[in-house]
Picture 1 (cartoon, rainbow, N blue to C red):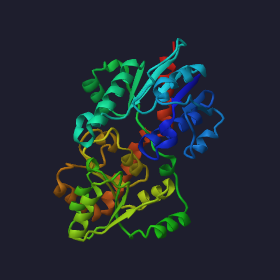
Picture 2: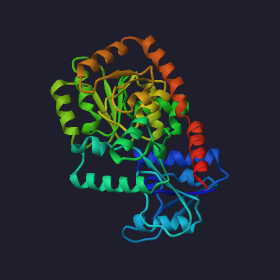
Picture 3: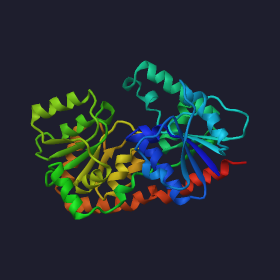
Picture 4: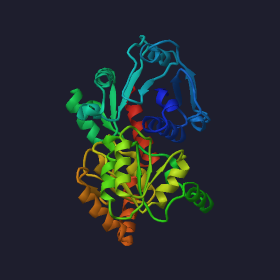
Length: 364
C-alpha cells in the first residue's frame, strides 16, 4: 500500500511533533518495507535524512502557494495514488478530489482547551477549528494516550469507536549502549557533576520547573536541565539566584549526548501539570533511570507502576521523594529495573504492528 504523510513537522520541528513524525515513519519503513511511504511538504531539510535513505520512503514536493497545505496537499496525495493520508499533528487537508483515499489523523493532546491560559486567544480558536475539522473528516483518529482519547470524546464530541490509542515510542539512541569514550566526552563537554538529578523539556510554565528548584532548596543536590528557554525561565532563574541552588542549563545537546545524560542521572524529574503523553518519561525508563513524575493526565500511563508520583503543586511532596531516592541506591536500582521492563510496551515493533493493523483495517 501507499501511505502519504503531512511531513511539515518531520522536516521542520526539532522536538515533540517532529520526533513523533520521524520515529513513526522510521519504524514503519524498518518493519514494513514492502509499503511505500510518501513524505509531502514544500521542501526538505537536513532532519530525517537517514530515514529518507530507506528505499520505501520518498519525498514529494507539494504544490506551492499560500494555504497549500490546507487546500492542495490532499489532492497531491491523491495524485500520487496514495491509499491512505495520515496527518501527524492534529490536522488534515480541507480539499480533496474524487479519487478514493482513507484519512487518519493523530491528535496528541487538547491542552489548549484544558489550560487555555497557556495559549493566546487566536491560537486557541485556530487549534480548535483545525482539530474539529480533522476529527470530523478522518476515517480514524489516533490518540497517543488513553488521556487524549478521553479528551477527544469529551471536548470534540467524537464517538469512542472512531478513536484508536497507539502510544508513541522514543528515539533509538535511548535504547542503545554508548561507548565509554563517548560517555566520558559528554561528561567533559557539559562539565557534568558526579551525581545529579535531571529535568528535560521546554522551560515553560506548564512543565513546572519552578517546583523542581523549590524542592531542591537547601539540599545541595545538583540539577541538570535540558530544554528550550521561554520567558518563564526568568522566574526560575530568579529563584535559583536568590536561593543559591546548583543548576546546570545545557544547550546544543545532540540526541546521543542526551541519551548519555539520562543514563548518568541518578533521578529523572518531570513535574508537568498536564501532558498528552510525556516522551521524556519513557526516554528515562529506557535509560534505566528512576522517574519521579506528576500523578496527573497521562503521566502514570507513561511511567508505569514503579515510577514515583507526586502532586505537581506540592514542592514539599517532591522534596521528600527526591531525598528518599537520592539516599537509597538500592531503591533507585530496583525501580529503574522494573521501569525498564514496563517500558518495553513502547518498543518500535509493538507500535509498528499496531499502526500497520490500523492501516490494513481501514482499507476497503
